[in-house]
View 1 (cartoon, helix red, strand yellow):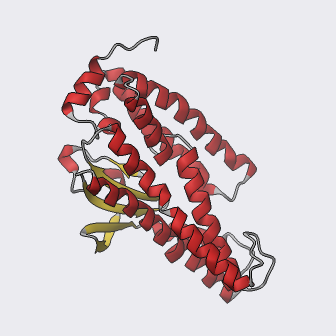
View 2: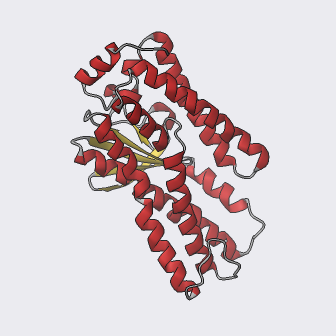
View 3: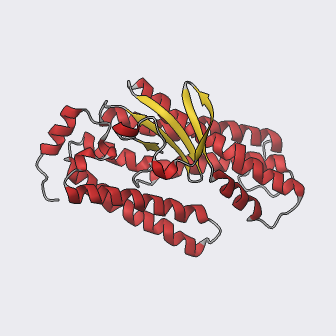
Length: 274
């Protein structure tokens, strides 16, 4: 996912994510790790009936280096694409719900579409790489749900599945502030819809999807991450609703990638029937 920092805090982690530590820099981009990552790792480790030493190590590797290495590459896709559009990536935050690339540019919705797509598209080469390794490890008899005692085969299948799931989720779930929601906003803006109408449509699409994610807890109680993603989406949509109510939707970070002239033009467009 991507986030547009406010001008007053471009070089800071936002207040609700301040519990993080800088772990390293890559491509001159500082990468921070949330302290709550420990909670995710512990939860993932204990939420299984396999308490063998090899099983515990396997889950630590999957939910540690594999998952967040994958997320880091995803966020770097956003960051480097933003730079190609003349923008800046201030930092990347890895946290229990995934990753956030704090970027800023004013190249407009068409350019931002490329920035939004760039993250999910990084999963294509990663998915192909892991599937190729899966093919080799199984002698060509690959399956994403292997019935085997080989942790290596299960690891390659899991890595392939993670990348496939993240790509599909980010491209096909148009909920703000997920990548799919960013893509939806860019398409609406590219179609010259006014800011207010774009925001209303985005909220009307995002909130029901978020509620479905929360209800998903009822059917899959161990997939706790899903409900937190849903709540995070609702939290962000509340900020959009508040900006609409206060008449300051043009100042919302959702539209930070618009140039001042584009923002003024779209703010003054007739609202139509919405």
